[in-house]
Length: 77
Length: 344
Image 1: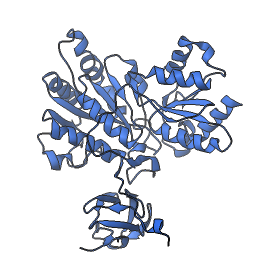
Image 2: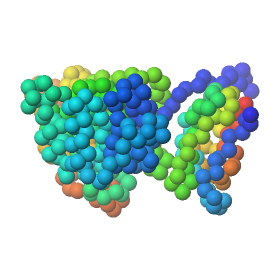
Image 3: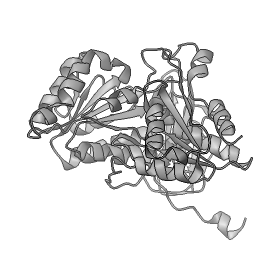
Image 4: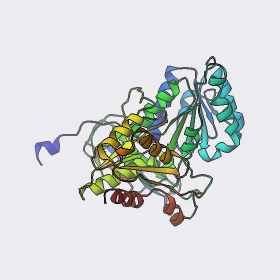
């Protein structure tokens, strides 16, 4: 299981940038597999992001950051 | 790196207000098959302010029903279902739309229990979005809780935090009376609204009730009592933190429920501080702020060391223009100026 958390692809337009709207966890907190960790948005379509694995989360793209789709937004150690 | 830096903080389950509301509804739908949801765009869309996201997928179209744009018909439907033993949650998309359906709300939903000599119960939740601040114009930005609180026969709850949003929703569903549940769009934690750090907070995972009729002292202070509700609680807490640096300590009361109103909590705080500021995003005249002033003076006018003050919406429709809208809303600037005037 990957320990990378990537911004999900919500738009077929690859130029569309995404907004990391909300982190439900703080940097350095323990997370469980499948736990809701973030909500993201592209062009007013929002999606939930769940933890792919258990561990300690290190947030790379903070709340309100604008990133490309598929960008690395956190890792779980 | 020190040992403590290496250690992970324990997992804390946080939710936005909208997700906390949905969790409360879903837990009650699981527990009680008589609970169902209806309204405009509550199904596939998930509620335009995300108050019902995911419920259709989980509970199916017989328990999560999209309705036509006919508030009179579907609020009447919910009232009828409630009198027959169901526990409907009916969403009025914006409280501003109540006018067309007001006969169903205040002559039927609110009065059937009384008119039947207590023989017929109406266990219904009328949930509705309130509030402005995002340029949605005069017919989509009002709060109007004073209107519903003024008319007898309905309980009125107005949460400000994610945990209270869940607990008050569960209490409203379990209550045998009609409960008007008013949520401000600005507290929901929606990705497309202005970011609000106070819209995200720890929420217990199990089902629980926040008692209807109980206010919360969300900040202690000895100088000024700020009695407020909904998004204005967030603004008042921000102002209280800012003024604390100047040595002014505000006590902030989150009313949480307007009907029944927790008079004891308001009075004991005013007895301590001697100064009362009401912050209310509803219209100023003939409403909540005047009611709170009356309660204090009816009890003991000597409680107040300084004249009562209120920060409310002046009696004008909410403007669409952003600068004009923020000129009438109870902003932090207006709240801070009022507190300074009270202690000055």
